[in-house]
Image 1 (cartoon, helix red, strand yellow):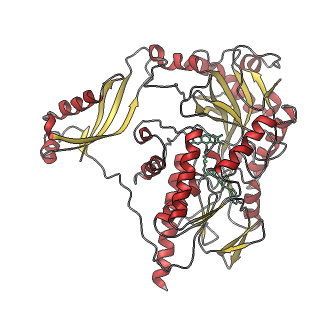
Image 2 (cartoon, protein in one colour):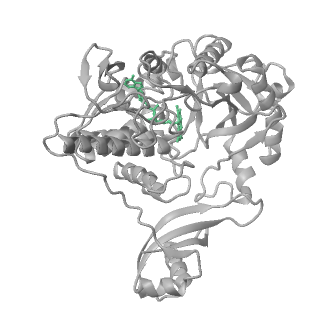
Length: 540
Ligand code: FAD
């Protein structure tokens, strides 16, 4: 197998033109090209007014590959293709009596459970929320009727926090073993669009993700696993530094010496329980800020120029960073092209925002978090849970500023920069449901964050024309950008540093920052757990 990097073609090329470009690049005859697949397709729109081309990475099989590679020995863009297939680390013996537990059925728990099931370990999944269908109903009740169900919402339930999302599937993690490819491949097997295997910034969108997640659940069950909803873990059974089981809210105890803990970043009661039980936890940096909304057409125009609206490119995205004079970094977070801002609280009396979109990304507005990085040393020193408490305080204040009925506080960018409350919308209509309350966002975040965002918005306006337009809308607040704690684990065994048998994983434990990286961490932890169980079997 040969890999060609950096093969460029015009946006409107045909399938045959791609084949011909490969043949020409390698200087072989058409008959010698046996087959090929697109490993990755990207485009570069960073240079204004230049021609936008697709840039391909192609994996191919050809006659006499050795001779071709020898001819291109000095060309670093023609190389043997790496093996990106996934190979399981082991297989459970049929008579294994212990079953591993997976707590949490977000992307991390989903992949941990799937991998364990595929290796024959018959995991039991414990998820505090409900299945996709019931959960969707409960989540819409908050958005439409201002009714929050604390155990079934945007954060909790089958599919985890990533279910009502943009379904962006990219990450900057190092991935030498191609685990991300395994994640994407499993999504495609479960019904996600095939193009997510190769486009450079793939996304699934909320609607499709719900179907994919329930198909994957069916596979886990078909392989002997079990998925229990409305099963909140409220305590741990510990004996001499070894985890021996978990206790559910119902009072039931389930025994196992191997437990994946994939809680997500919003399970504050469970984190407090872990802290009480003495499990090592430390505070970690995260970010706070607002969601900003602009017309998607404006972003398309600024980013793609004459290519704005091109069907092959879709709705444009952006990524922005600014270093403020007070030393704070302000950056865009979880940008959702053609999407909506959503109410993402899991707790009564609190308001927090996030963003989502459908696969088509054809809503009127673009939205993104505009957030300021904060860290324990400077901003919430002392207790490991001080970051959790800070989030809670800010989210409660946002609830009050929004009118204490789950509407979110909002302000127009022009007014925010000038420091005056907003009273009326301009052209940009906010998408947040159940609604926003215009006013002054300054009291919603610490002063250093307000100052840094005020300075950053005009600077972003220089990079994306119109970004600081007076009628763009800021909706508050964004606090759950990542977990405020890390549940520390050993680098080799991936078990808690002071509780054997506990495998902290995914975003809540501080080892992932999105759907893809959470899925990858689920695979890593499943492998570590499988190796440990197999080693114990060998010793008995
Ligand atoms: P989670 O997905 O949070 O899952 C944790 C699960 O554990 C939950 O289902 C929860 O109910 C369960 N749980 C918690 N405590 C217990 C307990 N005690 N007992 C039993 N079960 C428990 N990321 C992207 O990469 N791309 C995006 O486009 C994107 N958009 C997003 C949009 C929104 C609205 C939100 C909220 C998040 C978005 N994210 C996105 C972030 C992404 O969803 C998370 O990074 C990812 O879901 C983390 O996966 P996880 O499995 O570690 O945790």
